[in-house]
Length: 415
Image 1: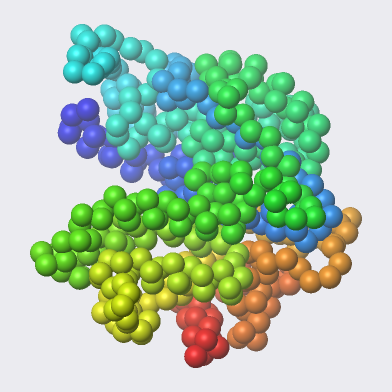
Image 2: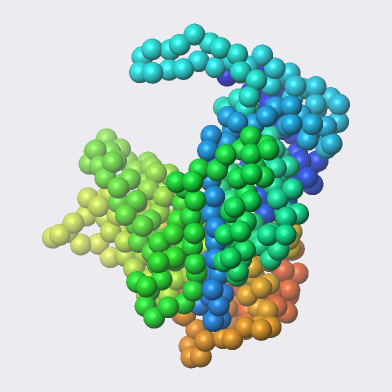
């Protein structure tokens, strides 16, 4: 894909962003400014917390589309765009979709180019947005189906989760979806269709939903942390030759490389974790172990934690997790109240027709947020408390000050 085409795609993307954002359903989190996989995982974490607090089951039907970008009917796409964009934007998009060609590469052999009039060219910033517009149009007839009653969508690009307390509704919906999407040349990949039931059982091992993966994160907080550690270790080992060359690569550069290639993997969607104090300390210990290996500090050499943080210009990684969690919480609160994340938070505090488990609540994302707030004389125990925080989050400066107070209180408790 040539440079001029990519530049034109960026121009078009900037021009159409306003109308497109109005057209899209709030359930879509992919390729939208201010939205990410964290929105999806945050939404699911509150669903899991809901089932840990109340005696109820929530079912998730996850579907994935096969070769989604390659099967788009361009005529239908342009028909949809005609209803939301102006003439100039339409002409530029028509130009970008016209006279496209493909070639097949097998090993070192590349076939001759051939023209194609299906799908959207991949490799620029506009194609994903055109896809989610097309998917939104394809889902609208499905939402009018009677099977869609009391069903919520949580979508990231072409990964679609249908959520309901009625499993039969989801099974009936699954019978309808293929025929509905077929009219738009979209095909479900049956091998990637997942059925997940979230509920509270006797032990964590019995709760199979904890190991279910959504946009790269496991639904169980502790299980996700364990997996992140494994992935971080694998990434750390891949760079072992760099860590060993301490004579040639300075500490600051190695720390920058570690933060870019290892820590980012470790902290993927860390803002959605609801962890106990013990789990946070274990995360700190894991982080310090990697830093010591990076510096070549091993037995019989010794280095205090404070000295380690001073030399590496870092701090406890638990503080980073805490800060990320509160920044994400504020971000979610400022978003539309129709997003799945906000709707699930509201539903969590709605006690109507719900029977709560007796005894001490299990540690979840909502309980950790409440615990943090309690340390500074606030709380998160009701929908009214949530509304107060939503109002506060509109003032970014006030929200940052709230977060700093929580972090400061956390530091005092630890000291």
